[in-house]
Image 1 (cartoon, rainbow, N blue to C red):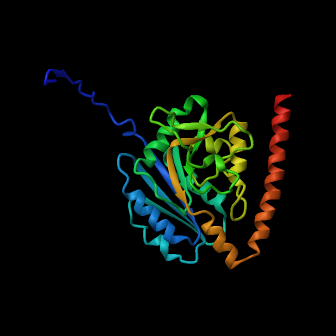
Image 2: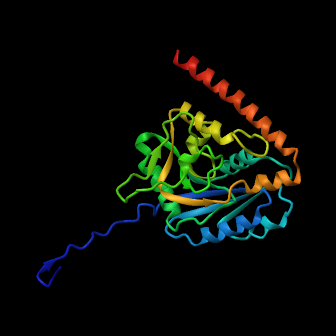
Image 3: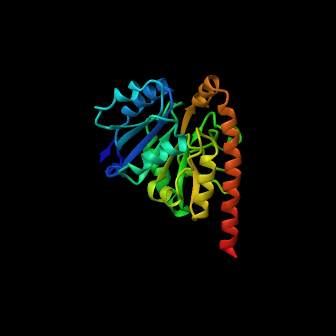
Length: 268
């Protein structure tokens, strides 16, 4: 159109690239119910993406907390009567998801950006040429601290890609806030069901790479993370859990060695 002797070009109308995409959001939790409630309130504000939330209660003391959401149409409840652990809880929910894109959130993640789900999905889509099957948000308080490569980046512009491929074999993606393809997650065997938590996500990153897939970090999504909220309460309640976590490290080392030996034989 024309006005004041200047020509203006109208922006062409485009369809919403996510209009036909639906995702399953998985929130495993054990007793950190305040964090879960806050997360659900944030998720409810999201628009433009179809989603379903899976609340996975790993034997919380308050059995009624999850049940208060049983009649909410976009929430599905999973409850265990004994401690199953983070890996088992995620795998259980993934088996029941209806969509290929799944998203896992720790119960102590908060301050999700309004475009959170859109940008996580777009991150996976744009990273597809690099065979990325799992992408993490940037995290202000990554756990473990060695995952400093997840800290918010500076100097990011709108022209930057949605992802950063992690090429260092020592890097892995903690399941604090991740989106992934269900088919490829399942092909790699999912998370190992170590007791309680720790090290299962590191082994999964290695297994995904063994199948020729990559893991990545989004350049467009940053979330806040309280950090170790659940495990801190567990240790306060039962200090013996610390010995279980130490044993998880030994189990991971054994599993990791088996994987490396398999890959060496495969390349010979």
